[in-house]
Amino acid sequence: MQSNHIEQQLADALFSHGIGQLSIRADGEIHRFDAPDKRRGNLSGWYVCPTDTIAVYGFWHTGEQHTLTLAGEHDPIAAEQARQAAQRARQVRESHRQREQLQAAKRARRLWASASPADRHHAYLVAKQVAPHGLRQHGDRLLVPLFAGGQLVNLQRIGPDGGKRFMPRAHLKGCATIIGRLAAASRLYLCEGWATAATLHEATGYPVVAAMTANNLAIVGRMLRQRLPASVAITVAADNDRHTEGNPGITAAKEVAAAIRADLTWPRFSCMDCSCTDFNDLARCQTSREGAI
Ligand SMILES: [Zn+2]
Image (tube, rainbow, N blue to C red; front, side, top):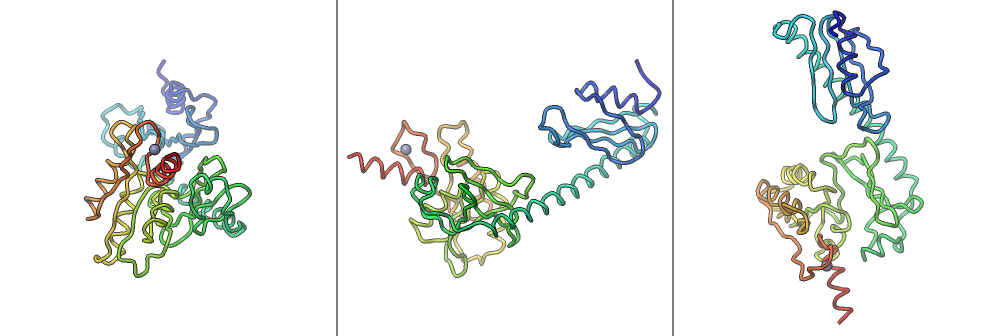
C-alpha cells in the first residue's frame, strides 16, 4: 500500500531491509540507526528527508543508497535535493568518524603511557623468536604502536596466543609501525606484520616499516617514497600467501613495488606441508628443520 506521507514510505522501505521500530523524523537532519546485519550500536544506517516529499537512506558499510520521492521518480529538483542530502550525510559521517578516531587516539596514548616495556619472555615473542624492539605490555597483551603523521593514533594489541586486535574505531588507513631508525638509513624494508618486521630487522639491521595489513601497504609505501630522499632504497618484503587463491600478499606487494620504484622480495619455502607465509615463519621453519636434522 502506497502512503502519501514520506515518513510512512520510508518506514515501509526500511522495514523491507529488516529495520522496524524506528520513528522517522522528516526534519531535514541526518538520522542514524543500526544496520540489522552488524553488531549492536553500529549506526551504519542513515536517512534524511530534505523535504517532506523526499527521503534518502543508505548503509555506510555496504555503500548502498536509495532515494524515495513522492514527487515522482524523474523530478529533477527532487533528484538534486536528494543528491545534496546524500552529500551532507557523507560529511556528517566523515566528521563523526574523525571524532571517533581522535577519541581512540587518546585512549591509545593513555594505554601506551600506562604500559611497561614488553617482557622478552612474553609467549608471543617467544613463539616468534624475536626481541621486543620497543613494544610495551599492558597485562598479558603486547602493544604495537601505530603512527600516522608522526603521532601515535592506534595500537595493535597482541595476546599470548597471538590473537591481534586494533583499538576499536581507531585510525588504521595509512598507519604503520617501525623497527629501527630511518635517519641516515640507505635502505628500508616494508612489510605487513610486526613479527615479520622484527625478523627482517634482526636479519638485516635495516629499519623496517610494518603496514599491518596487505591493504595498507600501498598507502604506506607511497608516503615513505614521498618523504624519504630518492637515494633511499626500499624493499617490499611480501607475505607469500601461497595457500590462498591469487596470493594476496605477493599481489599487493608487486603493485606497491612497481608504484614506488621499490625492490621486491618474498620468502621461498622449501616446506610444502606447513602453513608458513612470511619471513618470520621462514626463519623459524628453517631453524626447526635444522634442529631436527
Ligand atoms: Zn614452513
